[in-house]
Length: 354
Ligand SMILES: [Zn+2]
Image (cartoon, rainbow, N blue to C red; front, side, top):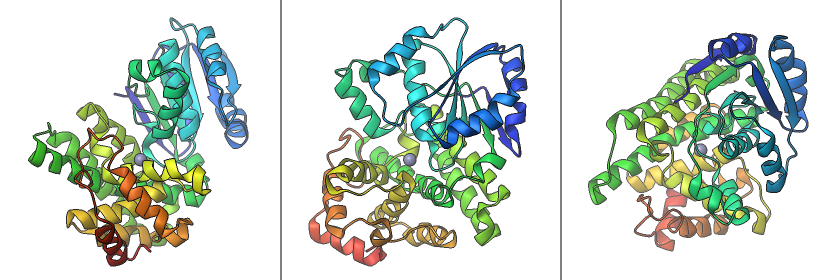
C-alpha cells in the first residue's frame, strides 16, 4: 500500500518534502512525449531540490518492450526510485519498469480518467501485449506493485480534458457493480469476500455521487476533482486490502476489456471510464440493482449515456457482451452463466443505452 498520499491544490510543491520523508535522493523520472513532457519540465522539475540527483526520460507512445528492458537494466535498484508523471499509459510502463528493475515508484497523475495510478495492476490490453512479448514470463512473475507515494495535484488535474475527467466518474461509479459481482461470487461459488475492501470500494463511488449532487455542473472544478482523485486513489487501497482487483473490477470491466479487444478490428477508440460507465448501467440492470442511480450521476456531469455517443455499434456491444463471459473466466460475475442475445438486447433497450 502507498506510504504517502498527497492530494490538493499545488500538491507538486510538496514533492521534495515527500522525497525527504522517504529518504529518496536519486530519481529516474518518466513522462509521455507531449503534454506530460511539458508538465514535467515546467511544473515538476522546478520542484526538485538541487541535492536530488535525477535522470529524465520521456517515453514514446508506442513502446517497444526491448527498449523498456534496456532502460530497466540501467536502473540501480539500490538507490534509484522511479517517478511517473502522466496518465494511465505512462504509469503502467513505470509499473513494468519497477517490476523489471525491482525498484519502487511514485505516481504523479496528470489526469483522473481511471484508477490506474493507484492500482497495483497494469491495464488488461497491455498485459496481453506483455504476455506475447515476454512469452508469459513477465506476466507470470508480475509482482503487483502499488506506488510508494501518490502526489495528486488538483490544480494540474483540473486542467486535464473534461472528457477524461468524465471518464474517471464512469470508472468510479462502476465499483458498485464490481462489489455486487463479488458478493454474487461469494454467495454462489463460496469465493472469499472481504467486507472491508468491498465497503471501501463502494464508498469511493458513494463519495463521488454525493459530490456530484452537491456541485452539479461545477463538479469539474477543484472541489469535485479533489473528490474524484481521492476516490480513484482509494480504489487502489481497496484492491490492496483485498489482495486483488476484485473490489474494483467486475462484469462491467470484463465488458470494457472485450470492447478493448474489439476496438482495433472495428476501428473505434473509447476511454476506459466511458466504457465501464455505460457497461455498469447495463450490468447493474442484470443484477436487478439500481442502474438508474449510476445513470443519474453520469447524466449530471454530462458523461456519455449511450452507445451512439461512444461511437460503438449495438452489434459490437452484443459481441462484447458475449465475449466478456470468456475473459478471466476464473472471475465469477453476473455474466458467467452466459447471456442470451434476446436478454442482452432487452437489457440494452430497457436501460436506454442504445
Ligand atoms: Zn477501471
